[in-house]
Image (cartoon, rainbow, N blue to C red; front, side, top):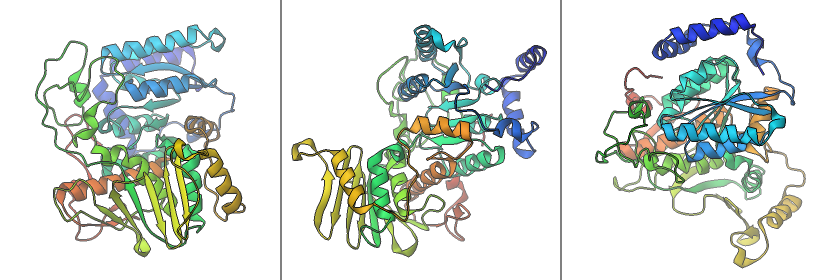
Length: 461
């Protein structure tokens, strides 16, 4: 753990923290972006022993946050010491979840888990090495950047950001602070997606013409009616940098619930399914096309301004990524096709199905299909993709080694940008020219306002 301070230093830090308002603290954190970080970079960037403990705080403890919390708790090198949520019931339930886990595992000798209504209390703790962020999308970038600036590594759910400006800001913050960031696009840690992309990258289906990705509609404006809110939720904090509106349980169901809330459908707080599932399948398209450090050059909306799919990302050499209804990520090449979704895979060559598993009714298994393809078509591939069989393990190993994880800030940031470009094409029904190198609209294209949002004071990125 990163805890080399004396007792006096600890007490001084606590006193300074308590005497500063949360707003002042946030200003201080973001002020760091304009100057070198005061601590020697070696303190934060040093390698850890694989057996060294990693202390973690969790920001957002809804359904996905609980899943991640349980997953990290199972790792012997992790100690969860703090949780934060704007809902009192969720917050205390998460704290109890951690407490009960460590009570049942006394050999792990874990410290007390604190529960905070405000994420900045977690950011302020110098004894925390890394944070896991599973908030609604409009809250991803602010705690992520604050954590990076304070010397913490970050696991943040996908899409990495709510808009393009935030994606660039997060990528810059990781680089400046020499931190490790993993985006929760865990499909890259699933074998079927890696094998599919390796086939494509190694030319198994010839020159790629297009990729069709299926993931549902763009975001829509929020028009939910006001509902009476029970005590225990800081609604002002939930809304945060987004536009203030009356409470509605669709956005933030009270207490511990077992479903994914529908805030993600509304453009003010999410990005519709374009950002929710698109962040998974467009990410695989980026991987298969070898575009992790680049992106499209143009995005074209569908002809019908009311259409909810049909927008197209245009890449170099005439390659297209098309938003449609279909099979997860579906690559079309001159010589064949590769289709992949979770637990499903199909490889077609010259019109003949070589291997695949789509349903149990057809017999066989996903494992046998992938084994056959790797044995016959990927024996000695020129391109071997990053192999991760466990998304969380990959993050923790990179925290120790200081290497970049499989869905690092550039992977997550650029995949998110693709989704945001698609949404902007739908929202504005406009063709947009894009400069992937500069991560900005090409000359005489787009509107700078489409890159960002109006942040509600005092929040900004």
